[in-house]
Image 1 (tube, one colour):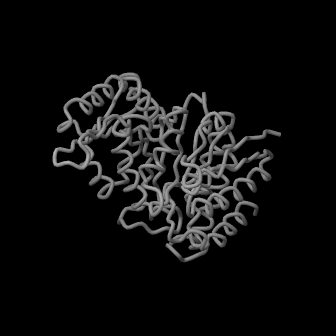
Image 2 (image 1 turned 120 degrees about the vertical axis):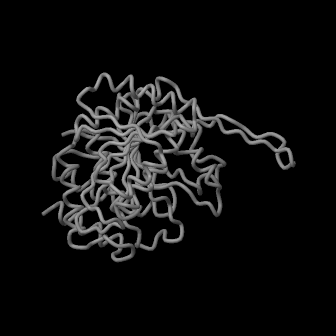
Image 3 (image 1 turned 180 degrees about the vertical axis):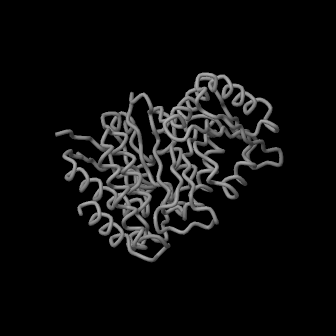
Length: 348
């Protein structure tokens, strides 16, 4: 029997609630499909920061390295710890240390979910470069607090980084409907984004079976609203991908359905899976957070671990629940009610 070692970082706020829900479903799937999940929970969070001065211990990365996958609930409690501290102290270091350069977010309407658009038949896979670009952390501030204060944030794009995320995107497009849209802003950013466009054309030559469409970020935002059914795989830089995936979450019904994976494609280190709805401190512990994004993220984790049948069964169980109207609207059902409905469908 295959055993998968999973590091759990529930984090802050509703991260704890939805991690419990996701692991209950993942464990049920493991029982049904004949494998086991050996989980270990780490209390790294904003509370941990307030107690220790660090979001995770100094040896946190090496501790996580021994696991097959990492599951993260949510990070952030801005009333006590600035988001810039919590993000740069936990999530971003993990992504960079483990070369989780492909952030994958699926955007489609689940059965029974009504989105804000007229279009319902869309199925978009957004792939965001996850380790460099606009979030490289290069820059600084000088003369702070004076009229002459200067803040510089430098985007860093490497040929290796751009090429590998594009190749990953082309492989996904080849396995789907054969269409890739590369998103830049090369009319305004004449160095980094022109470079991205050039690398796109070079890589595209190796994938003659994939149709490639370059598009500026502003036009893409409009396209996702006006004609989302025309899109297949989207590849974008760290910042542009971050923005577009929140738009994708909105058109699929809200952040409660927004699953994600931070993938190390060569599997030289663990990948990390997380819902992207944030920690929502105002509703933490009230049994009202929607766990569907978290459960979907757990399905993505199992698929990455080679348990494709279990992953597909979880997605089918989610849609069996939403088809009944369970969890389709904010506040319509409790966290536990949604979880138990999904679990019952999985075990049926």
